[in-house]
Length: 90
Image 1 (cartoon, rainbow, N blue to C red):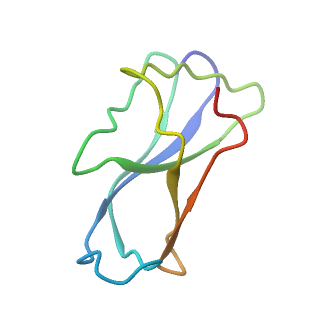
Image 2: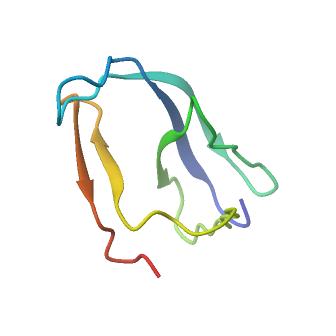
């Protein structure tokens, strides 16, 4: 985190991945990140969600290589997932 506060949650997938479009996630960690804090997103806990907890929040993302052009998006409550191409992918 660079500035502000970010609510960040890590998940691990707990279903058998046999049903297309279905995903059961188990929450592994949820915390508020403040300047100087960081989170590592790596298998098996490589699914995450976040939202700014304060106005003016800025974070820095460090990634090895390029993002995949298509990514999985999860709805934790509905237990679903969908493959999409992000609009902001560069």
